[in-house]
Image (cartoon, rainbow, N blue to C red; front, side, top):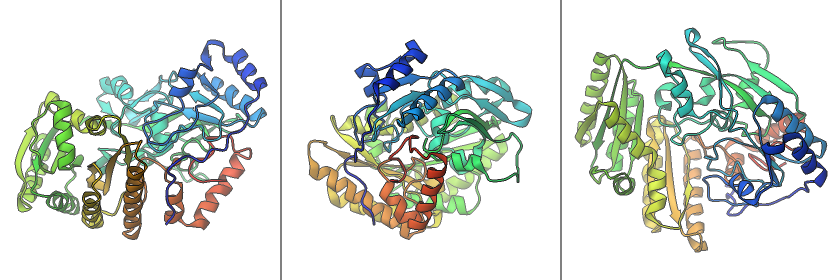
Length: 470
């Protein structure tokens, strides 16, 4: 098993003054080298750190991205795409130096094709902005990773989140892309058609490539009809095992539940304090049901009966939008609530995903290890698809705590791989999970990935130092 890096291995490349001058001349007010702007674009929500990029370009069009990449390519200088800055695995770190290309201003909806249930957007639009823009059509975009991430960043990391158990991940929901390549060429992958057998599936290749094969400038995604009825419920359990067994039986019975989130007792405590809630301080499931009024009622009654078999109690309903929003906002704020519960701490977040039949085996052994370690932690999970996250809360001034957290993460990933799972269900590899990718995929498969990278980016300028080392 390859251990993850505790610190970033830096391989800075020089950024010639000639390039900085050319960028300043081309982009004017859309260009910055100020320390504060560079530092903002040189960190994400993860725990690893690296020096900031040498400059930031604020792209406002595909042409802007093309020109920035072409200028960087002339000097073999790395370019790092930046969306909302919400990634967790060091995707934004300038580990080999270079410039950051911020696409946050590229946030327009380009085309809504309601009859075909698709929308084409620029990469900087966030999921909340997208849903606000399409709500008048009676449609919505369901992928919800928690953070208000950009659609381009979500496609780049193959994100998913709370709705994946019913609606899938970005892999299933991105239909087409416009991509700027390492040479500055613009290519299009995919179409709005539901299926195609035309050549290599370049869309699937690009989705999840984490900015290492191209920079997205347009993204076409699926939309879904807003459900006629939505109901949310919470249910507390005497143990994590009881909650997990409830989920496993629900999925295996084919109940089309839209969301099912596990929150452990540690998470409940910090969420109560942060969001001013009064949830029972026991492991709980937060669930949501979509469909017709009759269908929602039938789904909910089925899950409630299953929960009762495993000791579930205090089944509480949230049927109004305000009540549902309050519950889901608290869930989405669990990460920040946990970090604030230990001032000055950093969180190392895990991201394993296993087949649903092995979820209890993986989760319960990992909880026992975390409890025995003595390190503070919280646990949340999109358990309907076998994905869960430990957040180990460490004091950055105490090296032993990082060692403990990394050891726990290492053991967790090894267990998940033995059970047929993956080291990352939705966060991506970035810098932190590079060693784990070799364990999961094998040297041969990773070498094939390297071959693709070398062919498409021979100067290794597109977000280098991520996913694998060249």
